[in-house]
Image 1 (cartoon, each protein chain N blue to C red):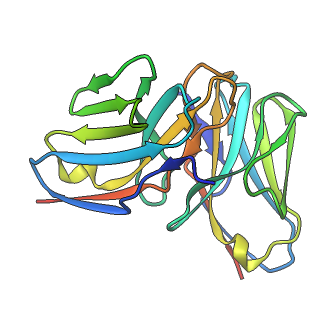
Image 2 (cartoon, rainbow over the protein chains, first blue to last red):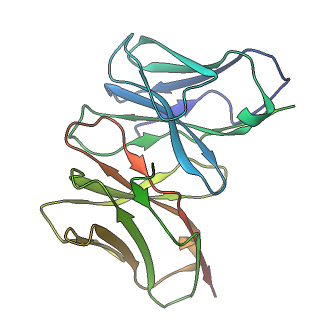
Length: 113
Length: 112
């Protein structure tokens, strides 16, 4: 069964900490994405990557960075966590453009205190 | 600027009846539309999609209708079941785009 795996389901971090959210896919997908989901705001794209070492900003990249050193792994980094980054974070992957939709991970619920 | 809009935050339907979830879009370059279903504390799962060259696609109890002239699509669930209670996201993509544009979601509650 194909999978997108997010390393943590729940995380609690302190304000100012550097936070790493990891995502791994086993489908050999070219594209990987990080979204956050907040009530009333839907899914908002933070960053995406269409190839190893390539990254593009999404709609809300401020306060975040990403790393894609290997095709199967896409990491989201909160450089200095703040309480307004408390959210559900969703990783997704897809084949190259034009080939269809996403496969999502189960999400990481991050609370910054 | 929200290019995909789901104007109804919530919908309540009785079991056995039809659920109709609506979605509007503003970008005429979108060529592919998808619906995702999301349960709490889980990632969204793909439900059904439609290409812009079609106006209808069916998969079991789920049918998506696309009206390009109105820039509107809808998801019909017949008959609705309590297990359909979830948040439904409409999404769209342009031919040149890597990323999907999502609506804000509609929370569907199917009551027994």
